[in-house]
Image (cartoon, rainbow, N blue to C red):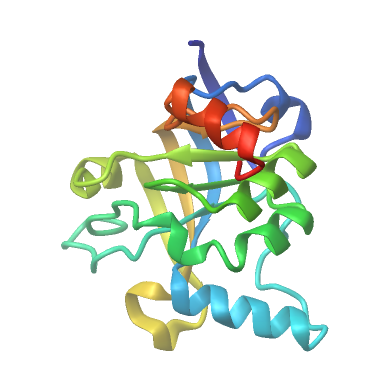
Length: 189
């Protein structure tokens, strides 16, 4: 296990050195997007329209923050369950998104896209949204304001604490070695 301080947008060289189990303190710009926003991003791509952010090197945080208290840039901003975005994630990784942040395991198609593109999937601590929001220095709605908490937001983060769950080499922190070997032998993984 290594500890890294990285800046988003992420460079491929930064992501290539990460291994599942590593701790990352991420600073820079990331974007929030949940289910409804992902569906709209997919529709934009289907229509040949640009995304509201540059995907190359981007990190998408699966979060729907609460309204900010007075004097704060954002309210509680914890991660949501990632598998709800699994239908959209492979396409975004292939467009240059370098990382996603959420909680829980990912579908085999997402894991394949992470390996294919050299991406990364980070875990953020569920239930710690109020604590995580202290690492967010600034927030602005970027697209789909009508979605409320599910709007796409541009966040400026500083030392945002993450754990590498899936790395570009196929490593998975959630995998039980005995079960993973059995699934791989069956061709399921």
